[in-house]
Image 1 (cartoon, helix red, strand yellow):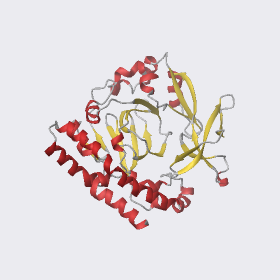
Image 2: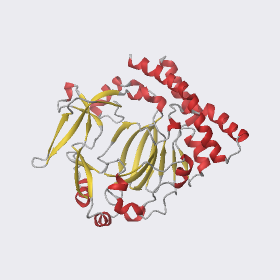
Image 3: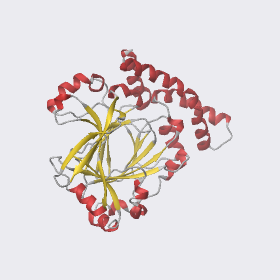
Image 4: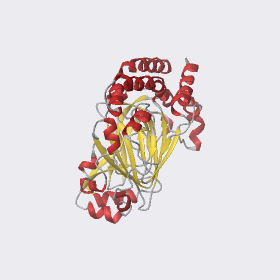
Length: 370
């Protein structure tokens, strides 16, 4: 079974994904995007798609943002180490071995105060601020500057057949890191200032990330002592999360390699750096780890658009590659619709083969959890 899984990793890359993330130098047509990327569950980077956004020029100036949002309350996320929503030791005694899924301390503060907290995050990582509320925060907490960006990515909206369900804003420094995880929606991630660095793994590599259930915990920050306290939620709630840190410290690297050999000994993750003005299309269920490099204003800013599409509950790009040509060919030959609408229609037919993929996924999961 282990050999079969390794062959699966190899086949997905050889038959569908290749060795690098595709880069498009201009926005694709809806049909091109749907046929070559969405239907294949294949990421890509698109340049020159948001060059008309006023945000690209305005948001690198902290004075502009602080002025425009001077009367707005926003959610500031605070952690002692820049790792929110991550697997973390329950206590400072790491030798104890008890781990939890830790979420940030969150408080509503005026935007100028929040931005200052982000920019002044300690270089020692003792108090790291990040604006990462999600939950459609760009259209709620940051609606004052929403006109600086487009409300959606037009060619993606046409291809996917729906408007974004949520649009989120992210502002942080290089001290904030997002651990490996997957999302159950299609993601279009646009960088406005600075750079974002992604490590990507397809859903077929799920076993390499050693997903386990960890008790949920929350940081609380005490301003009088400037200290954090981490407490397990009561009643206890467990969260399935990826165990692997792709960049362990030198003193931890040897032990991490022994604990997680399928990650460290398997194929390299796809590396992808997004610069200001670029968009990453990240298909649903792809695992991603995110770090960042600040731009001119001393921070990185990104906006992402989330779209939930049920037809993308496929867990193998390889399966897509073996079936999409047949489906698309059939749609062209037998349906009296436009090319775009016919592809959209027959992508729905791919739900009929989803169970085959999921059966293989469940067999593999049972093997590695036993």
